[in-house]
Length: 319
Image (tube, rainbow, N blue to C red; front, side, top):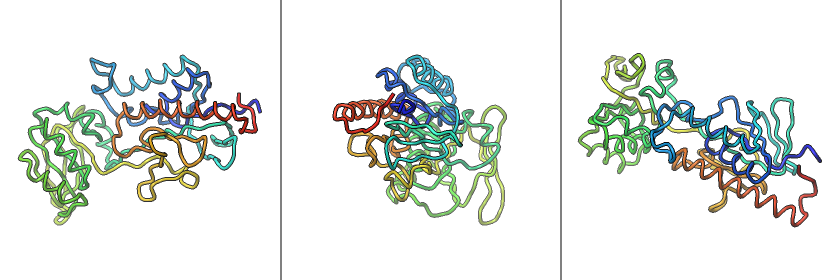
């Protein structure tokens, strides 16, 4: 069937674009359905200084444009739209964008994860201008400055302790007086002289124009409002993998929703379907690890396609 592609990549971020690059260089002519929000979380990141090959740093959106352009150079084609439905029950696999159907011998799922946000308009306006969702990515920008971390889980405690290596002061704002974080993580944060726990408070507004100057907080018990002066706000209330389309077909963690891959591969429970990047990684969540995962997925897909052709097991032709 001439309209069956070798590989469809679902998602456009470090994992999806790297998978597309490697697949294109293997002459697989991948179709990348990158989504309207292509580029992933890097699109709300300002300076990226920890990605190899950019010694002077690079803006997140500019880096994603570089990734995309490089994959396109080697023959990847792009569809800037969202996948609305998939069927992995039989091969060729079927992927829909609205009423348009696309078929492929293999699929790489690289839809990423989305950082949970506070939902404030002022937060959205100052994203990448002092509002961050990744301490590993951005803590070094706040050397000798004051930072607010919002959250009460292990990730919030871990991020506060990490940021304290650089910042002069770290406030951890939590809406209750008890934490979801493990006691050892809370004790570690409490023991850090730079960290101060601000309990029974919620952030209601991020203050500043062009950069963060402070946050307005409200007491959850009394309703009283106050302002914390700060140079940055780190929101550490969790991530949600973008897996809703796949939960009824691909194995996933029942609590978190992250896709499960086999061993050190990117293989899912469906032969011919691979998962790369933050959609299956809830530990590292870095652009460089996502890119490496995308590379692995393309290599896994290429080898699987080669094996299928060699064994004549596919039962259909691929373009």
